[in-house]
Amino acid sequence: MPGDTLYKYLHPDRVDVVQHLRIRFTQVSALNDPFEALPGIIQEDREWYLQRFSARVEAEIVRLGIASESKKKRHRRARKKDFNNFHKCYTDQDWLLKQSDYVQHMVDNLQGCLSLSATPTNILMWSHYCQHHTGFVMGFHSEHDYFGQSVRKVAYSDLRPSHNPLECEHSAEIFYTKSKDWSYEQEYRKFQSFVEPIEMPNGHKFIAFKNPDLKKGANPAVMLFPLPKQSIKCLILGWKSSPELEQKLRLALKQHEIDETPIYRAKPSSTRYEMEIVAT
Image (tube, rainbow, N blue to C red):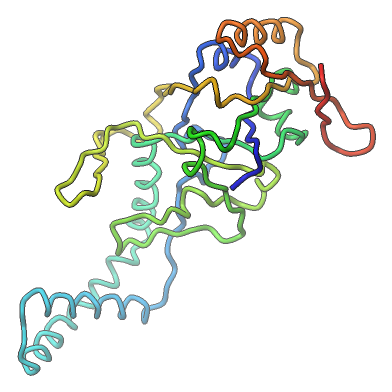
C-alpha cells in the first residue's frame, strides 16, 4: 500500500473535478503510453507447446471417460498427429499480434483507469500533466474506502508481460506493469468498470464485452464517476498557477462544505531538482 496520501496531477481546466466531484476513468488507449494493456507476443520453444498440447490431450481422456490403458494410448497416438497444426496455429505472428491488440481493445470498452502518484514533487509530472506547472494536484486519503484495496501499485520492468493465447484469462500484470522509463511517476492505479457485471449461478461475476465490433480506440466517451468529498485531503497549486484557479478551487471547497481542506503551493526547491510543497 502507498503512504497516507495519493496524488492526482491535473490540468488547470480540470478545476471541474473539484467543482462537481466527478473524476475521469480513462480508456487505456487514451493514455500516453502506447503499451498500456498491450501485452507482448509470447515467445516459448516447441517443447513448451508440446507440454501444453499433451495436457489438453490428457484432459480430453478424462472428459471422454476413457479408462482402458490401451485406449488411452491409441487416443494419444491419434491426437499426436495434430500437434504440428496446433503449434503452427498458436505461433502464427499475425494471429498473435491480433490477440494482443484485442486485449487492449477489450479493456477500452470494459473499464477505465485512474492514475495516481505517490509523490507531489516530481518536476516532470508537474510539467506533463499540469500544463507546465499552471495546474494543480489533488491529494487524497489513501486509506479512504474509495481507494483502499482497490488501488494497486504499478511495477516498472524491462520485461514486457505477454499474453498466453492458450488461456482464457489475462494476467493482471498486463494492466499494472510499465517500462522502467515511467518509474519517475511512482504510479498507483484504480480501475472502474464501465459495464454492470452479471451474476453467475456459481457466485462469480461475468463482465460482458458489449461492443466487440467497435474499432480499437473508437470509444471516445469521457467517463466520469463520483468522487467522495471526504477522500480529498489537500490541494496543491502549481508554481505558475493563476490567482483565478486558486479562487475557483477555494470556492468549490466552500460550496461542498470542505473549505477546511488545506491548500498548498509547489515551488522550485532551492537545493534539489524537485518541487517543494509550502503553505499558501
